[in-house]
Length: 345
Image (cartoon, rainbow, N blue to C red; front, side, top):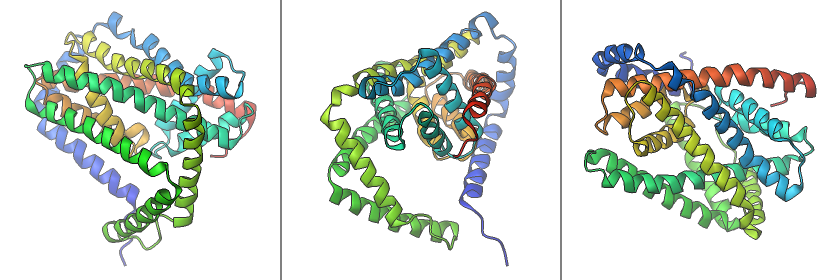
């Protein structure tokens, strides 16, 4: 009897086929991309180091600015940056679509005296602040792309559709999360249809989701929402740091294209970053490797930018950033484990 294929295997297969298709279709552009890599201005490329440090610091600040103001947490700026490095390392090295990172962050904040509930709420704040910051910047990018007559209709339609989907999704999420009854109903529907797809599409006998677990998670989410809704201005500093984080992330890619001698409009980069980041959450490869790059390249290629430059810029940026993340994050991750004990995630 044939062994059933797991969800992770299916996703890995789809990711491989997606990347293979892009590589085949772009085989001539890949040659040009390789030639472009030989023209990299190292003095400009070195700007990635301070920009990534800023990105790490801003990522940590979205969490710690909230914890400091709400609960009086005492943590230095250097320590918050170190923890951000650890979190990025975990998310890039473990193929779990961000789950390991959330678990690690809860454990890590526990070493600073934060209860699991407060640690979870801090991560909800981080997500909301970063998501809100990206939405604001993306709306600006959509206007910029629309006004750029040199761009094709495809990126305009994609960016406008993404903006509309995010706004609608945000409104729907807030509507559901406001009511415990609506949350329970949503949990039932997610459990029902999630398990149905799991069984029919992936041919799995075991349940993927258990209603009681999903309901409990949603109830906790409702409690988190109520706490934030009581004092929404508490999100002001995390939101501002979220803006810094997103802009520094986009700057990392922009600088890479600049180093290749092909500076591009940052607006399409912002949209591509959002598409790749959203889809990357569903890839179980470490750091979304494969699918992330394919989506960025695929979108940017529709904006009229030379495809060879797109491939070279995206691959070079991702290679450098992932390397820096793993090298720098591993040291602080191991140091934290040695100091606080074995990670329990």
